[in-house]
Image 1 (tube, one colour):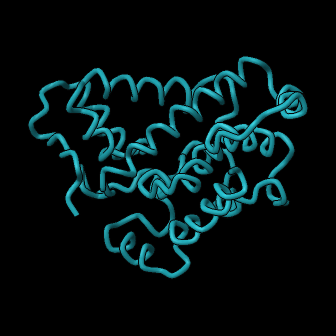
Image 2 (image 1 turned 60 degrees about the vertical axis):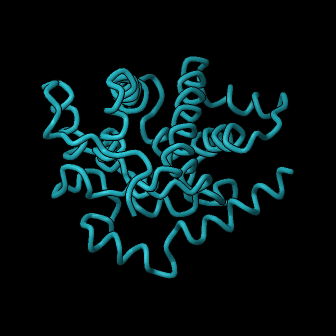
Length: 221
């Protein structure tokens, strides 16, 4: 299926800095080059996202792996397959494993997450689902995070939620721009063939998460 907004062909880009960043996306991902090739229609948009992702997601004051879990929580909630099939290389090096991604929708009852991670995920949940927050909710967050961390996590969740809600409408897919590199791809999605096989699996996360998301919407109504 063709993307709803075309990819800018890297072969036609003359800005060396933009080409270098697209190459980094292919090697390291998050973001992968396809989403940035759409943003490249407007260089200011391309660089706004690239700089935000570098300064707020990959760097910043809050723990990167916590932000990574929040990012995938959003993917599982809004069913952005493009984003949800990526993994942070930095988080993997810090010890995050694939099983850590598997129970995010049920984070409150999962033994996989500590209190700090659960508090951050509750924050992401409230932002994603427009849930009411009270004094107890904020006391929980302030017990785990500094105010600068809360600002950064909240801002990051809002940015990634908005971008993921947009990207899921575009029909973009991996391995279509600067193909041949698998930087940050989730296990089972490293090649076009592996990606198609994983998506055809009855246990594919996007097939099951849609039911979980619908349940969450119903409970929040």
